[in-house]
Amino acid sequence: MYYWYFLLFCEKEFGNASAARARKLSAIKGLYKYLVTKRGLIENNPSVNIETPKKRKSLPKHLTLEESVLLLNTVGRDTECKPEMRLRNYTMITLFLNCGMRLSELVGINIGDIDKQLRSVRVVGKGDKERIIYLNDACKAVLSEYLPVRTAPDKKHIPTKALFLSTRSTRISNRAVQWTVEKYLKAAGLEYRHFSVHKLRHTAATLMYQSGGVDVRVLKEILGHEQLNTTQIYTHVANSDIEKAMSRSPLANVSPDDMLRSMPFDSITGEDASVGRDDVEDHDDED
Image 1 (cartoon, helix red, strand yellow):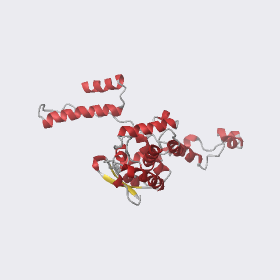
Image 2: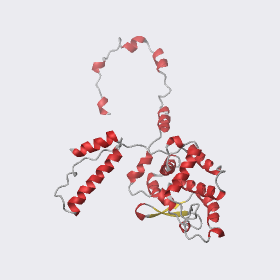
Image 3: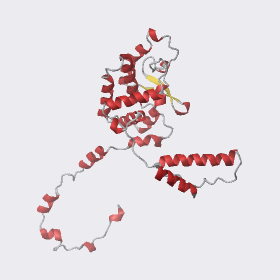
Image 4: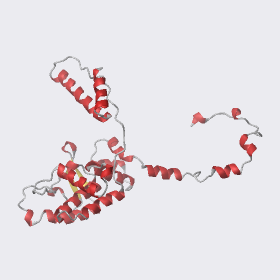
């Protein structure tokens, strides 16, 4: 029972959502499982029958196509950044928006992971699992400009083979990439949307599915998901699409005013109707 009070306390006092409470409960369950099975300090696991708080299913936040183009244009117009760093930043965000990479995957790319014909890139995802991501024309174009700069003679002395370097000529860090993306989101006027680096991955997946017509099973392989149900979160339909679908109904343009004006009043009230409402069988439940 005290677990329930603890979770309630976390919700009321700390404002923890169901996902945060589920993580804390998972830690508690893991501790008791360890004490029972590994150490043998207690006989029974008191947390085994506790129900995990149900997570609220929410649609992934993503940039629209127009916002994605705006973000790229903002990077390209950054006059405060050195040309080499601007090209690096543009390349990183292009890969995020087109390939749906995770942050760690992009940071971990080495020069040798890029196919010599710029057809594909090898990334290391969760669980150290490698996968090949094929590059589209936008990625090929920006990499064809960035790679000569990255492999220029003045970079030969750099020991790391990382594709993306920091200002200190070391592999760029996760936080540096996050800061870069946040900087350009703010410059593009998109800061109020509370986007993050991971939202660029959501954007790539959503645009490929909704606008590109990519099959969800193919999308699963592109994103490196283990389970198809993880990928199916991107199969949500935009509200605008729902609105358009409703407007395409063949009855959408039938005006009730026109129909009622053309109908005698007594036919509406049913005074001359030979069959009453109660005489008609109700078949509503059959649908």
